[in-house]
Length: 92
Image (cartoon, helix red, strand yellow):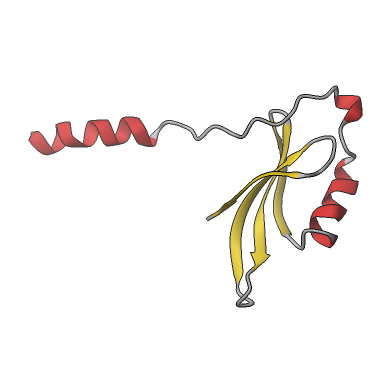
């Protein structure tokens, strides 16, 4: 019975979603075109895109980047919707 009560707090914290970063808010007509941003992500940042989506006021990708050792690392990156600048990058 003690083990059951010990797991309850863990389950509660595990279900809490991680908040996305605070991207500046712009009117949608000022947002960078999706295809232009995808080109920038691949050509300028060198990321490989697995999934591209909109998360609140940010563009977001899940994908990979090549590390200094040449190996691919999983990443999650948030971009400013107007400028395409990286707001936050997380390694998985």
